[in-house]
Image (cartoon, rainbow, N blue to C red; front, side, top):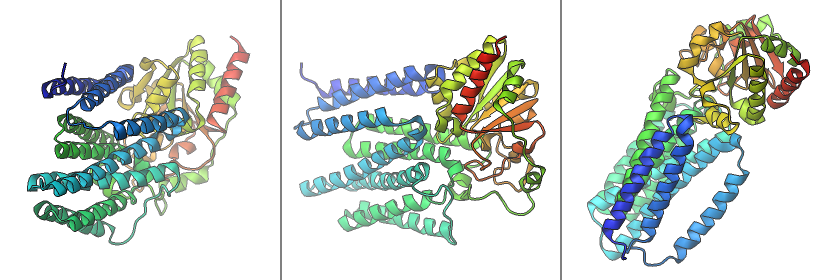
Length: 466
């Protein structure tokens, strides 16, 4: 049976439904795996329907591209560590942006040669190229910051916002000019300006805001894909791009709300470069000293506790300590201790980073609670174990008006009876802000690698018996 346009439209409709179900599944850890399967199956149908289209005249380059991409993707997937997942996501966003630019330029050259250019098509091409170019270089900068190739601190200089405004206005003006004239020179110029704007927009943003920026770049990549869909007259690409664009924008807004900041403040704020100046509360607290504790001290408190709350952060991801935490949870629960995990919306370097790691260790979803659910339980909690988190439990967000993170909602770990902080050193979090929780009377720091420390706790619990 011949694969007609109607068959392709039906296949695209099924794919779109599966993508929507996939997004819905990703709203909760318990359904995320199913959501991923829906999305992957939808993509398989979409690719097959596209390849069967009568518009495809040769499969040579297509097969070569798919094979090459499959090999590279498989190698990367097998070798990538969960700690590097945020920068991998940033890199993948850059590919989407670059693809949008290449498709736009290629379509323009092809249609120009065939004499099929018109103002609408050139407007679609200019939109795809501009959004794609900004996504490409912006994602490259985000990758560099997350990978440590570039400094995580904001790069700020006098007149920065004015420069961005001038570049943005010039980009829009040239894009309109290209849409009206079809000038190849103007297309090259607008592409170069958009590539520059992607750099100048992301380079001032500090590491503490990277989770929001990753989400925002995800939104950009969606809009780039949607614009490319208009250029190629591909309905499914338009639908998928709009889904990704809208969901990324909504997630960025939710995360900014969790940080008590506006998206404008995140994009233009240059947050995360230092810990404030003057006699801040952090500087005053530093004179009080910090209590350190041994593994045995923490075990003594935890095994006799009624409730223990574990707060994971990026340090847990670096140490790959999630499986050791699963064992710790089981050992404590065997002693009748209630164990829960507290997740802040911006913990880690990527939305959902901690949830993915805990799910990887098969920690039950009902033990993992979000900030609003868990905060009322801290005052009645005997022990809080903070594993590699920092800014998300910092009382400076509530107490120090001079702090850059003031006003950000936090996990109120400091209200528990006793807090044990697993840290490698006294270095502050990714925002560069001193953590006032270190200096509370009910806080002790256990120094060392998180996984080694938790393994030591597990060994002590096994040896203590009951």
